[in-house]
Image (cartoon, rainbow over all chains, first blue to last red; front, top):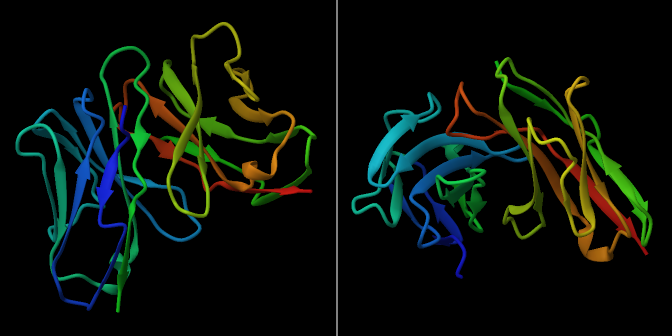
Length: 114
Length: 116
């Protein structure tokens, strides 16, 4: 049973550039979540998918952020026109929707904006 | 509003001793789940233990147990027989089952250091 996989692990980019992260959930999980974690804080919810449908978005997800899960399997999170404040760890999690719903997280993508 | 409070920024424990990490929560939802995750310096969030608000017994998973006191709205994590590998950040989280049912609300974490 492979866990949640995220790619890349680290991304360094210049301010104003676009970046895209990928998340591959645990195969039998139909729910997928994105969180952002800044230094010294706990993760904050960004968005949630049930299969391919994006059902919930946090107000933290500005217009520059977009997430997709086209076939209900992997997901991508794109940030356009990156800003200094986007520097953070971006965590993906997945879960089933049966029993206690327990999100399992990936290793995260650490984004640094120069 | 949902809120998780972890009042201990850092804790130290001697190897092989037990340690309790504090967590209090606030929610108006009658039904919710409580979680603890471990985050080593490498960054991954590792699920440790879950407690449902209507579970009659405190959850246990190996060396981890959750001291759930519903009336006090506290969900403390107890780690028994600490090991050097337990040194990490520990996050308490809650998922209300009605309001915001699709996401976890996290505290700010406690950094645990196990001393040899």
